[in-house]
Image 1 (tube, helix red, strand yellow):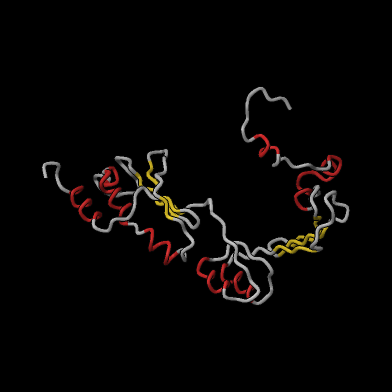
Image 2 (image 1 turned 90 degrees about the vertical axis):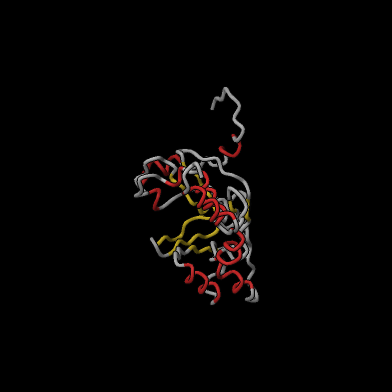
Length: 217
């Protein structure tokens, strides 16, 4: 590999390179490799039943030493309520992406620990500010008026969203997101909430009314 310029995240990028057995890959082909992978990690594939479970067992000759857990089974459970129920009944040992509404209930169970971490995913509200918008059936798109956009942004009570919907697990932010394609985003998500401004309940109505009046008024 020859690099003739500075690449800041080079080490992180190199960490994503997968090391495979060339002879094995050549002999089985890409399709079979996806079904029966071979790698260099501490576990090896024992069984994969599509859409049901994937079973890994510790590789005894792993260069870093054999893993402490002999067998790990992954199960794809898409329904949040089903995941929580399986955890509470002892059917599962670990659950990822626990529904926020279940956090307090799970925390109260003896022997179960809930770990939280910041999220990089955001829930967003996009406003189409084009003069002629195919999504707004009006002669004039009200979103082109900054006061309308500001009124909508101020009307979003981020504290209530955090408390009621996100179970107190979200973090409001006053950072304004710079956007492209002429869209204004208000981003809301567990772990981090992006808003263009803080919530002021007395402002939205007045802003919206002023936006609807002729310029002379």
